[in-house]
Image (tube, rainbow, N blue to C red):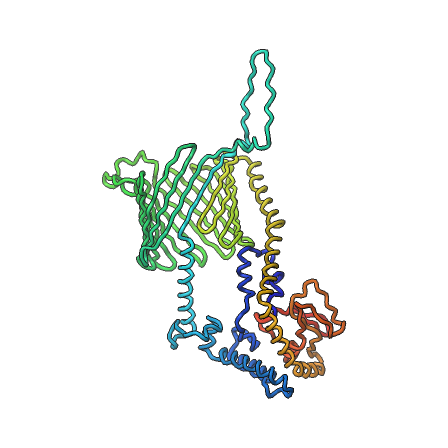
Length: 571
C-alpha cells in the first residue's frame, strides 16, 4: 500500500529528527522491490513447512480455477503468477540465500561471490567482507584531508575589568567618566593565541601510506611552525608501524609501532628523539581485554635517560619517567576510562565518562587531580547537525587553571576550535553561568528553531516523494484493491463460519493507514468515501482469520487498529 502514510509520526520519532534523516527517508520511501515474504504472508525466519502451508492457503484464494467469474479469473491469473514466483524463490535454499542478501536483483545477476558448494553462511560472510572493503575505500577517499584552526581568546577583561584610577591636578575638578558604548566591554577581549594545522594523506602502495602535515602557532606577536612527513606501513594484519620526522628546525624524529598478539591484547610503542646525542624517549603501552566490554592497560614512559654515558647527565633534566595504570570500557550508550599515573615529577588521577544522548548528541564528563596541575573538571557535549557536521561545547574549570569555555565545529575532517578564557582563577559564579547559559541557548534553539524546521523538512520531503512516485503508488493501490476483490467470497464464507462459533472473530471494520486526527464514524454509510490516505482492509483481515485468529508477520504491515464486536485491538 502507500508507504508514505506513517513516517512523520511513526518511522521518524521526534527525538531523532536530523538533517541526514532526509536522505535516509528518501531511501526508505523509494519504490521497493517485490517482497516475496510479504506476498506469502510469512516472516523471514519461516520454516519450510510454514512456507508450504502459506502457499497452499494462497492457492485456495487465488488459483484461477477457484473463480467462476471471468473478470475475477483474469485477476487471479496475474496474482497467482506472482505467488508462484515468490514460492519458487523462498522454497529454494540457494535462491532464498541470494534473495536475502542481494534482493530481487541478485536473482537476475550472475552469482560471483562464491562457488555453489559454499554454505549460506560462507556466502554471506564473503559478501560482507567485500562490501566492508568497498565501504572503507569510499570512506577513506572522503577523509584524506584534515585540518584544525584553534583561536584562543582571553575574555578575563570582560568579567573582571580593571579600571585604572583617575588623577586630577591640584585644585582641578575631577574629569567626568567617559561614556561607554555597548561594544566597549567586548573590546576588552584579546586574541591570545592562534594555532593552525593541516595534513594530507595519500596512498604509496597497497600497504603503505604517506602523510604530509604542517602546523603553526602565534602567541602575543611571536610564533613558529614546522612541516612533518609520515610514512605508515602495514606489515601484517597484526602489526603496523609509522615513522615521522619534522622537515624544519627543531628536528624531531619519532617511530611508532602497533602490535596485536591476539584479538584480546595489544602492545604499542613510541620512540621520540630530538638529538642523536641521547637515547630516544620511549613509551610502551600494553593492554588486554579483561571483560567483554572492559580493557585494562599499563603505560611506562622512560623520560630523558642515559645509557653508558650516552645522553650525559640527566639529573637536571625535567622530563622524568612515569608509570600509568588504566581501565577503559563502554557499552552501547556510554563509555568510561580511569587512569592512575605516578611519576618522579608529575602524578595524577584522571576520570572520563561519555554518554550518548538523543539526536546523535554526546555528553562528556571528566576530572583530573594532578600533583602539578591541581584539580580540574570539565563537562561538554557534541551534537550532530548534519551527515558530516558536528558542533560541540565544553566548560573546563579548576584550581588554579581558572574557567574556560570551548566551542568546536567539525566537518569532513576540518575542525575549528574556539577556547575562551573567562577567568584565570576559579570562579563558581562564572562556572555556573558558563555551563547554564550556553546549554539554555542550545535547548531553546533546538526546540524553537531546529526541531520545527526539521519537521517541516520531513513533511515537505514526504510530499515531494509522494508526487514523484504517484504513478507507482496508484499502481500498488490498484493491485491491493484487485486482491481484495478476489477475497470477497472467501471473507464472507469465513465470516459466516466465525459467526456460528461462540468466540468467533468477526472483523467489522479495519482501516489501513495513519488516522491521525481524522475522525471516521463506523456507524455511517459503508459506501461513504474514505480519505485518500485511508483504505478499508476489512475483507483482507477477515480472509486471514484462521481458528478465530489473525496472523500478520511483522515487517509487512502498518495496520494500526481494527474494530471487532466488542472493543478495539491493535497489531
